[in-house]
Length: 476
Image (cartoon, helix red, strand yellow):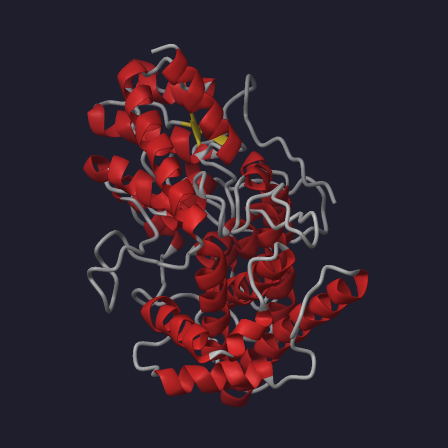
């Protein structure tokens, strides 16, 4: 697969400005002083089950190698992106390098989680008639916008970005895919920027409309959740609305496309199962504790507060946990031996199959055996499966994330993010990477400049965030 494609127009003659398309073009990255490229025309060659509009790119591109589908190209671009590689340095749940009395664990990172999510989503999507490369692209992309230190870093950056539109990992993923990740540049149409016309402007990876839509879990801006206006979840910042509106052209309201629903369930399945596995590997969880009533009550309280449907009571959650405990493959002990590792790996496979087959069977029962894509269906996940998945998340939350030392670590991480933001804001453009320094210099106002600083921090790994924080603090 030829995935490393150079889409930059560079020093040659600029391409003809894209014409046509509906809606306004995307804003120039990080503000800028000029107008962005015009909206696109046309689309990629037809892909079975997907109309031409679904395979359109913001900036139309010729195929470099005949025979590749538009979604194969999308998948290759994400796989070859620096943003995906950076996920290797971002913690999932257990910090890499920790050691238990059982085993020197090599736990999952955001990268390995994304790869596992992609495998689950690809197979489930294919079984339901989705283009497998499209679903895999969405799964590989879904965590690209996560900052250092996971959701803890996300919360800290949201406070930093309060005066420039907030921060949300999913909105950041869209921003990265369409603006920040350097892959494809177009020229601003002549006459739109006076003497500055002809400037190269990034359109990110220039993925297809369907790929960007499939990577969007929350297709609404901040404060516009369709059922919960107070929800912190959203999928687009205000200055990214033009490209978002292009992606959602023709979509029914805030409805999440089918491929994004498959991606979302694959994400839930992968992290609920694998976080449990990592917790056992690291020695943080004794599975026999799940039979003790005080421990069970604490797990159910976490599940009800964070993961389960609002109307799920303790009895229903207990039934969900007991269904899992009653399976012959459930890991009732773990001592780190090769046999124990193999049994645990079998349990994770059984759980993934259980959750995916439940969704596949229920969805097929409602919609039949045909190809299910875009807005032609809704993924049906039985309540029993959702509750079992919620209980697994709660187990990992209770025994891994709520350990006393973890709260001290999270507090330190929030300090790192806050102090890093303050130092970069005071010194910028000094301290910024060359890419973000140029964007900071081009930003038209303080709000846009603040967003550049936030984007810089979000791009860091856990280690590079601490390293940059230490270097700035040392030179203060």
